[in-house]
Structure formats: structure tokens, C-alpha cells
Image (cartoon, rainbow, N blue to C red; front, side, top):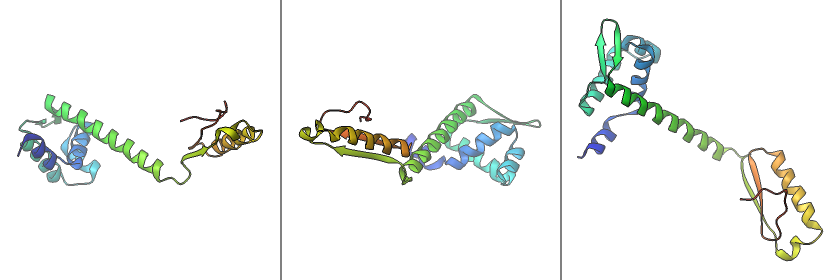
Length: 150
């Protein structure tokens, strides 16, 4: 098993969340209270990550826990992972919203020069205004200046 397989199967989002809580509170006991889990569970999670990575993430002392240089690097990675997850969840929410999306209209060249072209532009603009999360696009024909294009 190579390095990336070993880490990918052993480090969990929960572990990164625990490390982030320790960094935020400065103590494993306070992190446990904040996360509403036991102190031994926090200690075990950190110990397992350290074992998997083969580096010490925290300097533990009577005053609490402080991140080592390795812990700082993993913390930055954890913050990035959670930021990406949050962005991904926002994207999923957007995709699942029935009021969002894209509407495309095709127009034959012959008809785009007809007097109705201005009406089509007004309809497309109105559709875009009624739903700020929808875009209207016209393809084919002569582009109308007020119509959003892909």
C-alpha cells in the first residue's frame, strides 16, 4: 500500500475537525467540550493521525496543546478541505434549487430579423429579472443586445 492510499483510508474529516477544534481552543479538553465528545476520543483521534503520518502534531503540556509545524500544515489542509466541502455543498444546493438554472431559446435566422425579435428579447429579459438565479440565452439569428449570451 503506497503513502496516499494509507493516508486516504485513515484520515477522516472528523479527525481534521478535531484538530481544528484543538487549534481553536488551545486544549484537548476544551476541544472535547466544544465538540461534545469525550476527552479520550479526542486524544485517540490525534494519536491515530500522528501514527498514520508518523509525525507529532501537538506539543502537549499542562497549559494545553499547541500545534507543531506539522500540525500547522495539517490544520491549513483541514481548513482548505472544509472550505472546499462548503463550496461543493453550495453548488449542490444551487443545482437542486428548482428556481435556478438556464433557459435557452433557439431562433432561426429568418425569424430573428422579423418584428417579433424585439418581443423575444423583452421576454428573455423578463425571465432573467423574475429569477435572479436564472439566465436566459438566445442562440441563432441576430443577437439582441439586451439578451444574456452564454
